[in-house]
Image 1: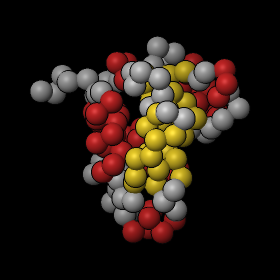
Image 2: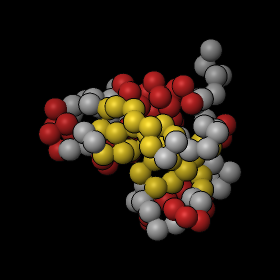
Image 3: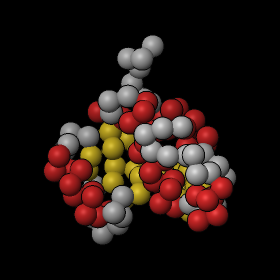
Amino acid sequence: MTDARPGPDDVRRISLSFPETKEVTAWSMPTFRVAGKMFVTMPDDESSFAVRCPRLEREELIKAEPEKFWVPPHEASSNWVRARLAALEDMDELRDMLLDSWQQAAPPRLLEAWPGLRVGGE
């Protein structure tokens, strides 16, 4: 079943697979946190999710793939980007995006303790 498109349950399952991650409801939506720092949210109807993303990279992502990435006006000054689940290529792309966001939020001790946890691999 390699054709399966990622869905909200996959966001939840993959996010919770990372070390010291917990799901916390905030602003009436699921959020995922590592060592207390948020790295994923699933706003609205769970057809999309938001991850940490430096602003310069975010603008490049949006310009390259506007059907996949966007930022609502009220989040314009943040370091977050939203992605439409239906536009993702596969589970590997979802995992890499979630892991990248986790790595931005995780404390150095976790990054050091899990050196094999890398984007693009196990």
